[in-house]
Length: 480
Image (cartoon, rainbow, N blue to C red; front, side, top):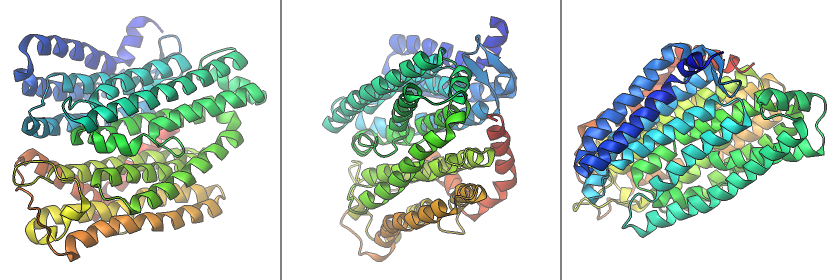
């Protein structure tokens, strides 16, 4: 395949790359006063990149001499990434303007991160995998410390950078081992080598690569950065971290496990089972004692990543479809929750993040309280809310291959997680009102986004099951 055809396959990344460069020049020339216009153009670029997936970049095959693939799996993942990135850009001005910290570089960093995430889910070579992951990470480090005058934000960025560099080194060492013992960097070469037998060298390479990727999805025991970064980062950045990079890293992990390490299923499956169980248990237990709502959402993220990993364990198309379904619904639940957290501002407009401040919210802000309740019940996986469906899918995938004991343990851990979600609902509806009075909703856009997310995760979401099920299964089948 020639470069012209390869360019057509990577059209979304080309649109975002050239758009980000042009907007960077505009930001340098016009300054921060052009930040809103740049944000609008950035959202339009993400929409254009999503629309380009209808062409060869959605299912065109392999390009760049085996470094990049455009298939149904990458197209579905990119669509989720672009939607999440667009929402993060949309909600940013309302937050940063009140802080006096809105910068024209913010949407540019989101676009550059989206380019890296697109490369991650389309990578079929260890080199393109690493380049995409690092491009995403470099932008993320800056975003975490975007509030330059906030000590917590600076601390979050520093911790994310140091631990990210460590994870990057672990991943790179694993890549070097896989290359050394397989003789190639393509996923196909690694799969061929593992089909012939998983020796000690390949096994160590497998472990190190999976450890590096586990850091990106914040799976236990590589989760230590998540609570501090989620709490310290600006809330729009937390919303971004909790959605788009999670989809990209999970998509990359699924592709590596299935395409590169498929013949070593028995080896990587043990690692995934441990990470899934440890993440669901620790994420649930550690969240119980939290007093900061954003820190609680960090442990909620760890908990939900564990449930998504249950879908990967079977190594089947149905299980991978369950992972994609889980990430789709998870994005709606998490972004909706963080949009509600954005509304937690006192009379002076200062952000309030304590769970105690939600006491009696149902009597002062009934609409916001109802939205919080919908998202909390859905995150807990309580039927008939739509958050129950992806949990059912990943456990059904386990039962389908005879792993019903693991499914039963997973169901038991979900009961632990329900406790802290219900605790928030109890605080909102049954506790006496706190002294903090949240200001009324100022942004119609944020209100509309909350409503859309709440409707999707409500029982109405089940009407999307036929379409969503077919889309995710077609996307997952592309890996096999």
